[in-house]
Structure formats: structure tokens, C-alpha cells
Picture 1 (cartoon, one colour):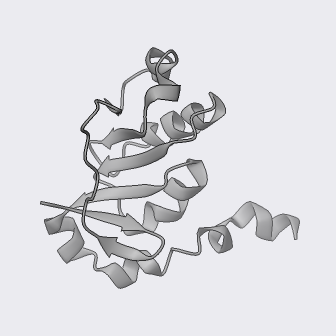
Picture 2 (tube, rainbow, N blue to C red):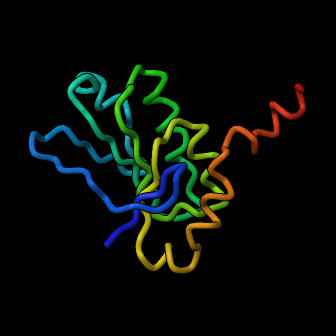
Length: 126
């Protein structure tokens, strides 16, 4: 099973892909491969095979710059400490395993839910 993390905390995965409107991108994938399908996709999941593999953050940013406005989900080994970065790069939510959710409970994720407050560049400019 998996847990979906949003700014409001943990929740179940309510996504149903009845019409084939979901795409999965591996961490070494090219978001340009989806450029002709972006308007027809409601959910794109970007895989994080390791918490040390940050390529998914770049993929999310590229997808948003390409004009993708649908639901963008980080899937896999994303840590609570990385939640603010995931949100700033364009992700709407994070999909984690039940095991990771047990090791990093909801309060650790919710502590980073005000992701704009954890933006050090804004603090430096302000």
C-alpha cells in the first residue's frame, strides 16, 4: 500500500486511471517525450528510486515550464525533509510506502507543509 502526502497531511490514493490519463516517468526519463500528450494527462508520476537522486525535481520543474498544469506526483523515496523542495519544484503531492510513512510520521511532513516559509532565497531577499 501507499500513502499520499499533501499539505494537509497523509491520505489514501484516490486516483483512478479509467481513461489512460496517467503517465509515469522514471528518474532518468525525458519529460519532452510527453510534450505532445501533456494536455491529455491528468496525472504524471515521477519516480524517485533513492532519496539521494534529485533528478525528479528537475523533471517536475521542466514539466511545469512546458505548461503542464495537471496533478504532478513524486513517487518513491522522498523524505519529509525534501517535501518543501518537492512543492517548490512543482509537485502537488508525494506518494510514499507505508514503511516510510511509519518511519517518518505525518507530523514530520506537516512541519514542512508551509513550504513557502522554508524558502531560504526569499528569506535572504526579504
